[in-house]
Length: 281
Image (cartoon, rainbow, N blue to C red; front, side, top):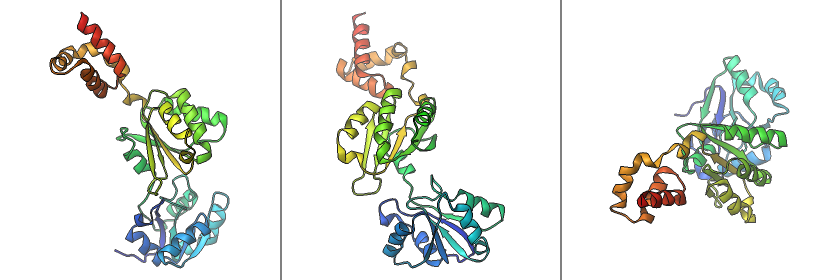
């Protein structure tokens, strides 16, 4: 249902594939009086592809309060769309102060949901995502990086965060040094032609990504398994001796080691050694 009600409409736009934009998003952009965006040049390309002509007002971290004052009366009388350069607005993008202003002044506020890189990265990670938290962008300063990595290391929940192309090497090196045993996913250029998803330990990913220059280009979303998801240190294989003996009666030692490894997460060579020791008893 198309609405022409006055107020602010938070509109999600494609992160790479133009076909991902919803009909409702297009209708909202067509029906609004003007569009608030980050980069007018970037947003103009999108609107041109959609065949939409609208006035664009640039809003970023340094002029947000000025823009709010400039459009304060319009918020009560016009239909305004808020978009970011790509994806869902306000996720590490400007707009928080504007939304806060609307909430405090009882201005109609609604959202047209759509593309985001966070959910696809989580979905394709192969990591438990029933509980997760978004940690924003990988930081720039050394002391901030240390605190950031420490927080991930201590998290019981899956963590997802953004990394720019010029920080991906630093990010992976820090993960190798501090979080070597957990499962990690790195998604690159989601929904685009060069989309890639790498899954493995930090060391595996470091070798796969850093050793190939083409893998260092683009935008990255990193997903790190939470501390509580890995329970291999607490698994006592002796507690499952009967079940393992049943497997040994049907499969080879190598096959059983593979099965137990997949079910428990314990390294295959450790399982194999334990099986050999158990069998000789």
